[in-house]
Amino acid sequence: MGKPVTSWTPERYRELARLWDDGLTGGEIAARLGVSRNAVLAKARRLNLKIRESPLTAAASAARRKHAERRPEGKPPPEGCRYVLGDPPERWRYCGAPRVAGRSYCAAHLRACTRREPHAAP
Image 1 (cartoon, rainbow, N blue to C red):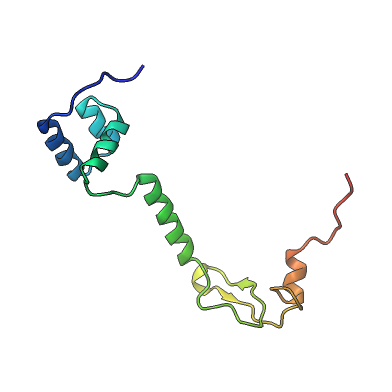
Image 2: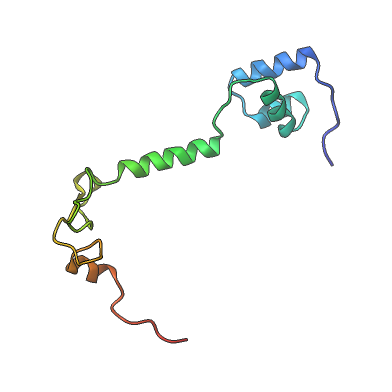
């Protein structure tokens, strides 16, 4: 079952604020104060303590930044093939050859990226 109900005293508010400012997670603060993590997070919000990014959100943001760094330099050519060439990522570039009408790639890269066999009927 849940943790016992405790009252929030001025001392506990100060302790929460101090631990929050020290960078402890909601779960770590909860363990020290003997309350649930949700109680800590709700109280921190009501006390207008500095909003911090969740560790999960921070990891996702870092992954997005890393992925963005791997994109080819510059914009894709307006009328050229948008197939990305090069290895390692520092040398990536767009093909730029004339595109097949209505497609993003030139004929060679379109063939390389599409199925050559029709789907079999179930």
